[in-house]
Length: 253
Image (spheres, rainbow, N blue to C red):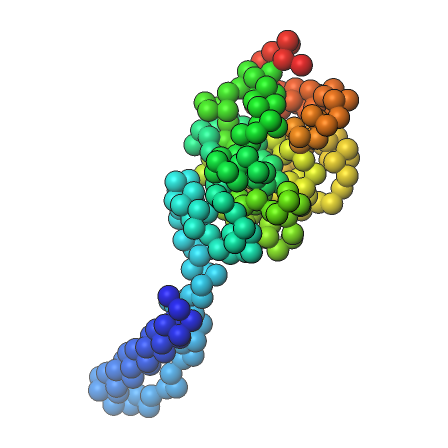
């Protein structure tokens, strides 16, 4: 619906409400000769509720959407400039009622090419992390990102880009209802948890998002660049395993 269409519809609804009030007022006068009439109420707020603006309409639609519908919305999304440079949007994928949800910052080149999250070298490494705590990305995990389109040159998403996209992620979390969330990377943690602490500081606490425990760890790509981070990641993975009650594969490290 265009802006002009929306305004025309609001005007029509306002006219209908005013007419209905006039009929009601006339009926009152007919039924009660002593009734002197009254000023019509201000229907402007009700008109806005009946014909919401585009942002309100989108939010209302998202609140009623399934995971499959969200994926469709993401693939056609043009809320921020990232849609203009993507090859494929990456809605996220995995078990609809996953025990664990893994959240990264955004797609890279491999993900942009395939439309799937964490499929490159870092994705294979993430698979190994999951196997180390006896989880499988297909059967036990849902994987998503803060932004669903690749930022150019893999730069960090801008705040306005994340703000445009994160309602999709929030709805996915509400639908999946995981037992825990593993947030990989500083950028993802900052946007999801609305904090700007150093990643090292965020690792020391089990956070909460909508009541769900959140563990923050390093991004797999960062660990591949610096293998000294493997030890702290292993500690974080064991914390996740404890939260969701799965055994640790002691050979996984």
